[in-house]
Length: 134
Image: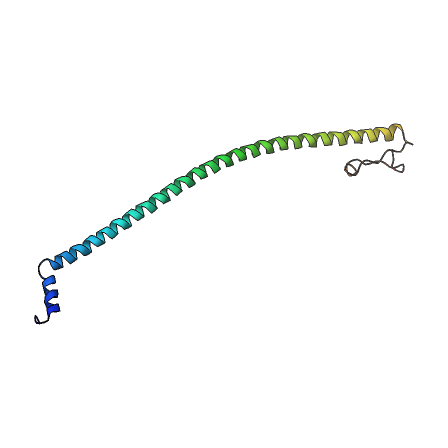
């Protein structure tokens, strides 16, 4: 077996420190790959942390804006509801006043024709006809 020079070279390289050098080189290479992977992972993790912090900041700003909008809407709705209540009471007061005027005209001036109320009030104000009993 030792007659072949290639085999002799391989045996010489493998004997002594050759194997240790190869093992050391492989271990060193693996360590370098691991360190590079760890560095890349840490960089990616830091990128995700930065992105998460940016999203948290944006979310906080959106929450603040949403609270302000909700408060403005609540104030607006309260104002509109108050205006609506005022308009309703004013409308019903006007309808009652018109009813009283129609009744007064019908009693005091029996031959006078009373103008027909607008369509919006037609269901609320009834004009007595001449055939209706006084």
